[in-house]
Length: 93
Image (cartoon, rainbow, N blue to C red; front, top):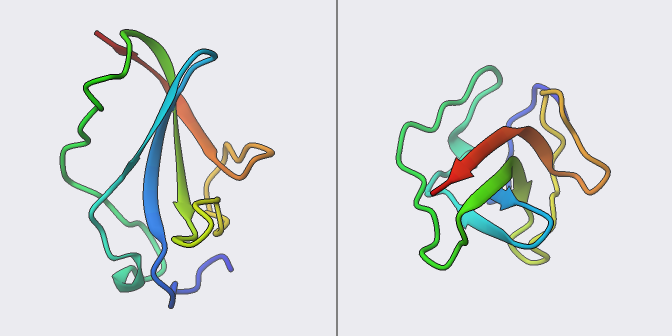
């Protein structure tokens, strides 16, 4: 599905993942309006208040709203076996 628009409503999600804890934050975007090429989310990502301080992997995926599982292959590197894309690390304080 590289280079094709998405016709169904998928949830763009960011996951903060560590060995002991993780949190998934769904971003307020309508991916059906994206066209092939670069898509940019220019907004805040709120960290859940109950997320413990520490180092986390930042991962992104487009989730099927029914199953909450990654459903779309993105045209970027970093795809993990579970369908999430690893973008790097951050520290939550």
